[in-house]
Image (cartoon, rainbow, N blue to C red):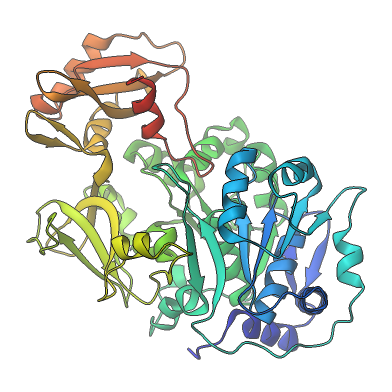
Length: 507
């Protein structure tokens, strides 16, 4: 595949199929020609306001057509777009703004007050609502072409990590990061081979890698993206049918919401070709339930913002019932991705040994913006990126994750991975959700605690739960205490925030 930049890809689709729908938010639709022209207007308006190649521009809001116009317009002039999570509090938005130093901020009207408080010094545009200044600003410029920035290594996105372990970091991603792995697939498998007739659901937040990149993949292939502003299960079910969705990416929690919605039992999913899921561990029982109900191909992605999304994939054929063990893996690396498991000293470990997962590929980030020390700690001179995840590779090259290295519990000298204990507990009928953490202990250093959300109406019988787990894992891994709670703290991508659970129980 030719090494085209994102803006050139969209331009090519606009020339070949100008009337084909690029994006539709269910209220309005943009053809590829309209999308290209609006992005050109944005580019010209940014230039008129003094924004130049290498400058940052930011967006604070939910999924909107305006965001994608703004993003592509910025790409055209070499500016870097910074999507900001709308769920962040004012001080957290301020932290991102202070880090990125954007020249322009596009904000959805619902979050204008947050922007006023967090970024009073940044030139702002408001989209949506009665105070829409964005459309006026965009339409002041003609849709004339601009001189493109042809460098494949030029940055176009700066995605901020969730900050669950401290200061949020801006991950800088280039055209090459986004598209090199796709170009490395000589004969893409069906689940990776898009058609211009595909219709994808863009339901994950654009401030997360799965949201923006899924839209980019859609537009890269000249397909149609249906943009949803909020994730409401009943509305999503309607959208899947009404718009004949063929591809979607979701986090496991969203899949659970959909499959457990009563209407799912009567919804026609025959148009759906593939569900891609990523972002958090998924229990085998839930996965089997989803496979039975949706009846399409399932593809698991493993990756992170720093790897520009998926680098390891569990393909549809690995989701067959006879591959039960492989369902517990996250799959095998894509063509062009190198993986190895290393010990704390960075030495490679043999097959089956647990250590930290490190990876090298063209998708590895350019670095953390303005943070050379943090970049060096994550990305070495040879291009190997430390994921912070613990796992092992089997003889067939499948990656099995144990947990985040930083979440590992050390009790009496034994390493205990929370995910392993959680997997032993989650199948119990009394358990709806569970998170396992280490809590301080004078004798053992740390002991295992299970924080459990009970199933509706189920008895909270800790002894029975312990007996269940004792049949599945070694005794030294068993929880020494069980705590029943109404809900687990999560970030905007659905990941459980174990740090918060630990901090609450150590204060």
